[in-house]
Length: 148
Image (cartoon, rainbow, N blue to C red; front, side, top):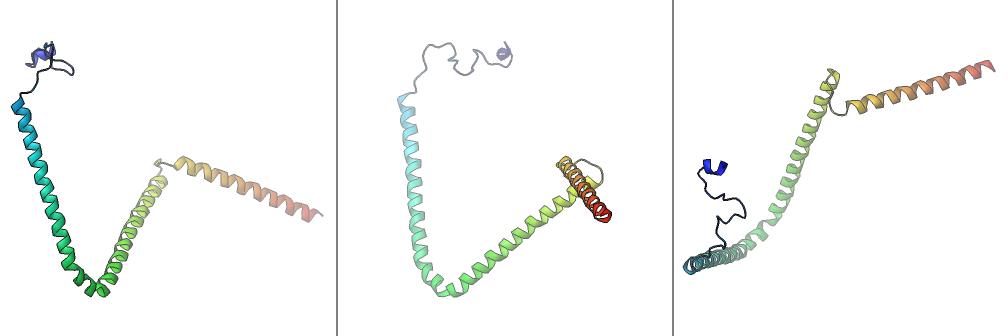
């Protein structure tokens, strides 16, 4: 009923053949046209990829002597550029990490409840309990040593 309001007659859903018992076959000319178009497109792509491969081989053949002549300069320059890029990326990553830590600390200290605050509070309570136990044990030993 809703399909009729949209202007679709006969359903048109998946598996619905519109009331026909058989699926219509495409005409021979349409199939032949699709085949010729696909073959033409595939062949032209194959020719273009071959031309690009040939151009790449020619460019490498021409550029290899130049690269060999300038390699004492290019190799150290490439290494220096790679190290500088790695340094900048590392610096940026550590800077973002530091900002996120400062943001978490600010939220924690201002009373907001950032993720992991419960674990920190639990660890703080366990450390305080252990410190208290050690202090009491040390005080007990000091008292025993002074008594004897």
